Length: 105
Image (tube, rainbow, N blue to C red; front, side, top):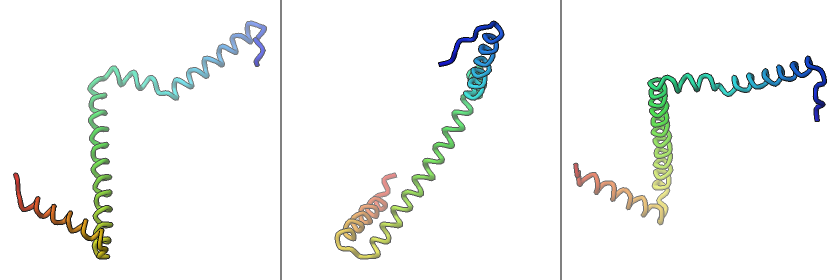
């Protein structure tokens, strides 16, 4: 535990150090930029639209990669002609072909 400063100069020095530490922490938290952003609502809206679009593109690319990987694995499993898995893949192919033939739109 720290000892309390005795003289006025020591007290002022301790207060000064505390204020410096607080200002450094506030600068690290970037609170000034946040309040400026809140005072400019159109910029906030634009940044949210931009980040939402980037998030959507990222999800689309991720899902495409995941689906391509699954299809690739299914093709490999289909080429192996495994009895149980091959029947499931054949059923999936038949269902997809039937849906393509219906042309509901």
